[in-house]
Length: 282
Image 1 (cartoon, rainbow, N blue to C red):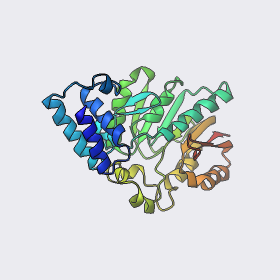
Image 2: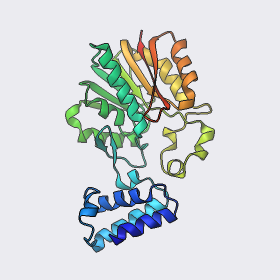
Image 3: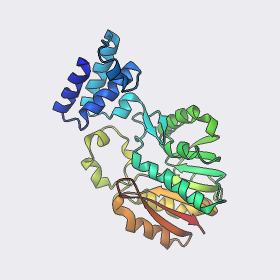
Image 4: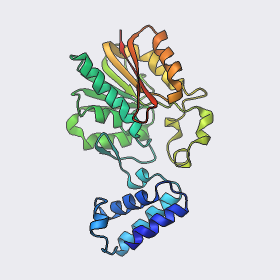
């Protein structure tokens, strides 16, 4: 298809990292078909409406806008989530949090959570993924009301795995200080403030800075999360949080100095980078 080949070349000329893939994904979105259909129906001409929409997508991609925002779609744990610029785009490495939770609950045997809190939920990716194998009441918490609008859309899509409750608050501020959760998960802001201008343009120019900025040392939210969570975790409850690969020593120390956790564990993502720290509540 001429339009596909032209777009792939145009993307390459403009420095798009994966030009052919992006051209295929965006064209399949325009046509409402799987990517394979672009080749099984390669001689099918585009309508004027399809051509115009594809041109709009091309302009947006060349401007640096991520493909997931252009499509308003991102797959996470085999679920298609709605995403836009109000929330971070869920990353494959964040699935490590889900994998760790699943593994640790299985090891514990009878530690089946009845209540789950996804702190800083964004699109709701973590809570919705865990709901595929845990039958729990889920509380999705975010300090940004606009992010919760996106999360609510995804919760409605997968309402059969609920109940889901959405709460606008900073960390645990909306809850009474009592052990009410069996499981707390989080992908908090952990990028050092000084590193944000150095992030790839597609991230720093389009994704919400508030969901990235972890303060001067990247640990501001993580420190509060780890220190406050024991108040809200039931004895034997699990906390699992994503971290930056260079924060291992600092985060492990935060867990160990509270004396509220045991069996603190570090897990790596599929690329081998340290990604998740988890521990049981004493």
